Amino acid sequence: MAEYSNELIAVVGPTASGKTAVGVSVCKEFSGEVVSCDSMQIYRGMDISTAKPTAAEMQGVPHHLIDFVSPDEKFSVAQYCGLAKDTVADIAKRGRLPVLVGGTGLYYSSLVDNISFTEGETDFAYREFLKSRAESEGAQALLEELRLLDPRAAETLHVNNVGRIIRALEIYHSTGKTKTEQDLLSRSSPSPYKLTAVGLDAKNRDYLYDRINSRIDRMLESGLEEEARLFYEKYPSGTASQAIGCKELLPYFKGEASLDECVEKLKMQTRRYAKRQLTWFRRDERIRFFFIDEYDSFDSLACAVNDYIRKEREK
Image 1: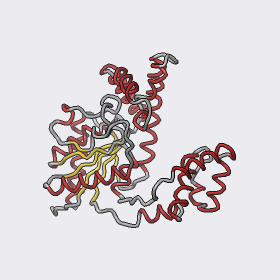
Image 2: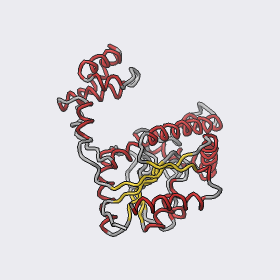
Image 3: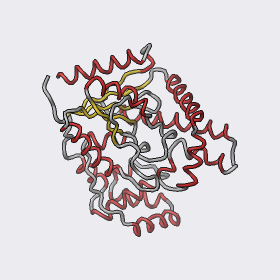
Image 4: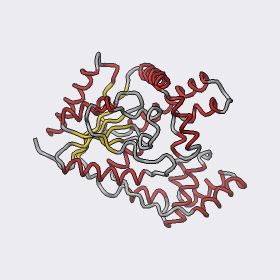
C-alpha cells in the first residue's frame, strides 16, 4: 500500500452516536492519534456537559485539541483550523495516522476543504451602527441593502437571522468584496488531504434519540448539575456558557423552572442539535455512513468501519 503523508481519517456524526469509541478503535487499528473536532470540548471545566472523553474511554490513545481553552476566551474556527493543521502535520511527521473525530460540522468542513479566512478585521463601531439600524429600521431594511450588494447571499438568509445579515454587510464594508466573492475565494485552494471520512447515523431515528436521552441521564448521575452550577458562578457569560448541557439548566438555578422541566428541555435541544449535525454531514458526499442500529455489537460496527478504511487506504 502506498504511504500518504497527507492522509486524514475522519469519524463524524451526531451527538451520542459513538464517535469517540469508533475513533479510538480506528486509532488502535491503524496506529493513529485523535484530533478532536468539537467546538465545546476545547473548553476547560466542561467535562460532563460536553461529553469529553475520559482517560478510560481514550484507552491510551493520544487525543489532541481537547481541554485547552479558558471558557472566558473567544475561540474562532480560523484559530481551530490553524491548530488542527499543525497537529495533523505533526502526527503525520511522527509516522502516525491523524484521525479527526467529532461532530462540529463547521470545524470539519473548514479543515478538510482548506477554507481560508480572509474576511478582514471586525469593525466593532460599524457592527454597532448596523445593530442600531436593525433596531430602528428593522432587519428587513438591512436585508434589502444586502440584496443590492450581494443578491446570492441575501437569498440564503432569513430576515430573522440578523447576525448573519450584519456579518455579510460587515464583510463588504471591511474588504470591498461581497460574502459570495469571499466564499468563492476561500475555496480556491484544493484540500491538502487524502481524506477517508466515516459518518455514524441510525436508520431508526428513535434509536438515536433514546441514546441521547440515556446519555443525559448518565450525565446527571455523573454530576452535570453541579458542574453547570459551578461553571455559571465562574463564567456567567461568553461563548462557552451557551453550550448545550449548561444553558438549559440556568432557569433551574435561578428558581424559574424545576429540574425536571430543564432536563426535558435539555433532551429536546440535544435531539434538535443531533438533527442539525446530520443535515450538515449528509451534504458531504465523501462521507460513508454506517448505521449504528444495524449492528448487533460495537465490535461488529468497529470491524465494519475499520475494514472500509483499510480498503480505502489501499486504493
